[in-house]
Length: 182
Image 1 (cartoon, one colour):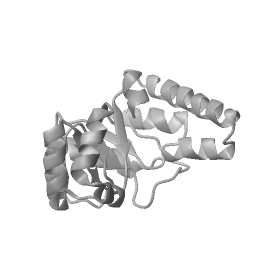
Image 2: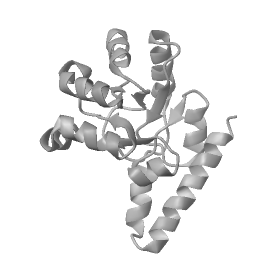
Image 3: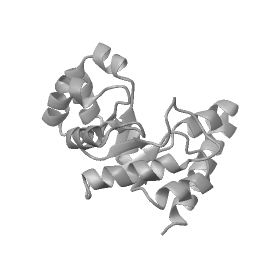
């Protein structure tokens, strides 16, 4: 976290809620802020159950990013965005994380619904983005492209030094894809 922040990037961690809760919510928020972290994406925590996290993130000036999904009602999208700080994570599809062959039309419709709820709030899309073409597609309608599993897959394919090079190569490919839309 500190290395990413020192490089000048906004360092946002993504974690299931249980490890944060087990670590200690206040302690996690304090340590994340001290390391230069900008916030956390908590995919399995809904705002209704996040009162302690909301308080800790407020106290330490951290962004909190909750998810909306294609199945979310318009009211749920509005209330989730209201609880977010930084951006809202729009899950491109229903299901678990992992790379996909295509993004799918649900993502663009979900971004449009989120923008209808909060026109000026950033909406970032993830869940399955794995190549430059998908990154370009998502960047054409969203404020940000979230990639996770594709990086892990590249690293695990070859965990030696070549794996790190493969991750760097994927990052370059994805960035080039995003820039195609501009």
